[in-house]
Length: 375
Image 1 (cartoon, rainbow, N blue to C red):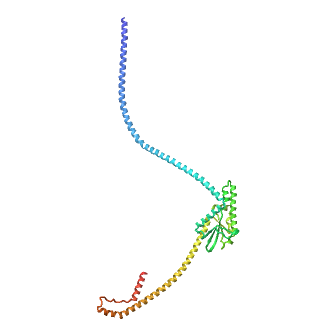
Image 2: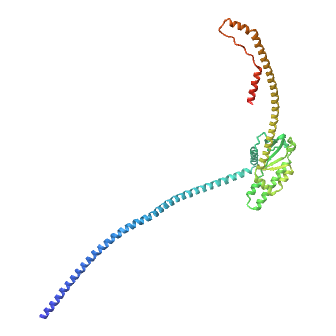
Image 3: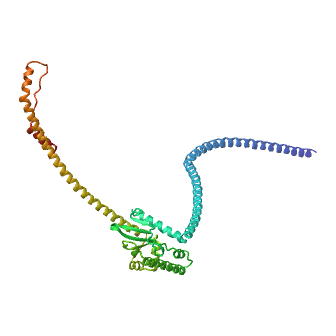
């Protein structure tokens, strides 16, 4: 029993000490943990505060460092926005202009077709040539119906001739101008679909111009217009029409000269009419010089007559002075002596002034000095 009691006591004591030791261990562990946490909290709190302060300082420095970059990026973004708006506006304007150009091109194409159709009508071509001819004459300084005449008709019936213009030269010489617009074959050549057809139409164009030269040379201008014209001008109202005909007939100018026909375009016709206008100016200058000569001769004759009259007037003045002096002398000897006696009798409070004679020598001396001073 004693052993059993002892064993129980030993076991109970062991359990008691075991629980006590476990309790003390847990308490010691808890205390150590609390101390560790307190120390850690104290350490880390100061570290966090220092780190926070340092982070704030570093953050401010970083913000100050990147602030110029941020401002630059903001300006760049603003500029990009403006550029994008300008680009959209420019693209819109370009698109609008392209659409407008397209509409204008379409309208121009339509008007060109209308013009081509109109120029295919004979009387329209003729009227256009006449207007171009008149404009060239105006640019050259030739007045209408003075130095040139439009639509002049000579004779009548089948023999009637109708040049488009007659240019009058000095001494009443004449130049005949006839406007021709060979366009049909030329327009067909421009609308040709291949090179072969274009060359064929250009040859037709050259033959048309050559035919106009022959027809114009066959007209009886030299017989029916007096005085006979110097030559006849075939006016083609377009440099391109003339050059196209020359490519087919290089000797076109020579052939025209042989027939008394000079081919002219607006440029060459204006130059020719400028020369005519200059000759008219020279003629007028000559006429003015002749008038000046006649007027100068007449003026000289009148000056000579006026000088004679002045000399006669001078002689008459000298005679008048001599007569005046003789009258003064007679008055002094026959009248003034009696007047002096009456003045001595005190008939009146007035006195008789002594008449003075004119000194002819003194007058001539003063006149000579005055003329010398003026010269």
